[in-house]
Image (cartoon, rainbow, N blue to C red; front, side, top):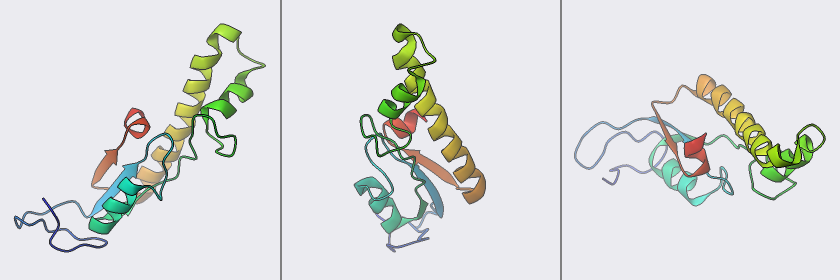
Length: 118
């Protein structure tokens, strides 16, 4: 259902039902706070989108899987490296979301792709 009032904190749907006023969105692997889904949610609800600084290959993103591979390369057997890197990136993203949810206290958590795994 489309919201009757677009904008932050709108809490009335077209059927007159109450909807959550605080939403936390957990973005996908290559997305972030500026992604299309995050923007869509912000237009309709008061939405927090913590940046997990996540990517598959970007070295610029501090929690990227590639950076985790590099971080774990000296301490992990070669055949365990992919799973160790994935676990490291996942744990870092979990930490970001735990802090954000504790601070923001959302009524609803919405996630997409990688964010759903987190």
